[in-house]
Image (cartoon, rainbow, N blue to C red; front, top):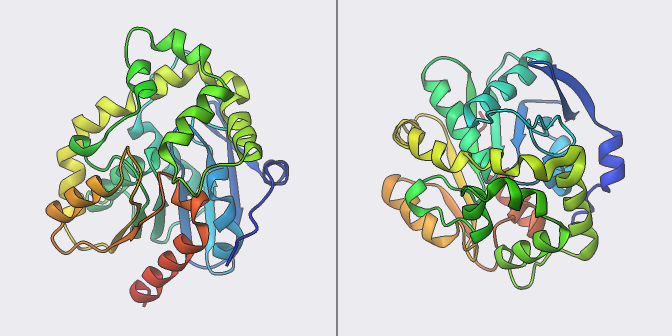
Length: 292
């Protein structure tokens, strides 16, 4: 079953905005029912969910935003970007929308780390969650294998390399992390690049990439929250992802002995765009089992 998706121009036309710490944040809502917060990854944006948006909106109240520094949201050039602040942003968006009931999470990549922070806050009594599903991401710093481009962004050359980042480099990096049979089309790469380039985005990539060392600082706190076992969790992972594929799943199973997971054998780092119908199927199965 193929999912139609939403053209980027149409997606952008459906966006709304609110202010977070004086910065303009673009966000999307759709559907009715239990709230489901979708959290995108680096370096892309909430459009990553466009294949899943319509079918999920038939069952749930969907909320997603371009996080600070991403997509069509503000990208301040002198800012100390933080995963903790991005979690603050997600909570501010929920408050803006008046959502007080427990929230379900569906997250990917960088968004996994934001979801882990929200999970820790759930057990600290700072937010009420109902479940969390992770797609490929650096859940554990010890298994995260960043691309060379990401490592260089962390180096003193980062500011220069960010400014030089372009669509050609994006295409080269994506070709390495997607499955051999699920590569992005030229049109998809154009759209991904449009979102990255928006608001002079390449100039902040070296600031956003600080999430990698921040993950190490928060690692034990986030792991402890995942190991509590009181909130339903699932991992849906593309196996051939060189950054956080099957090798990350092995560690996931070691650290969470009763782990609920699904392995997509031929899929890479972006399951929601490479195999959206499979992700939808496995997400709905998870919710059917967990929802009262």
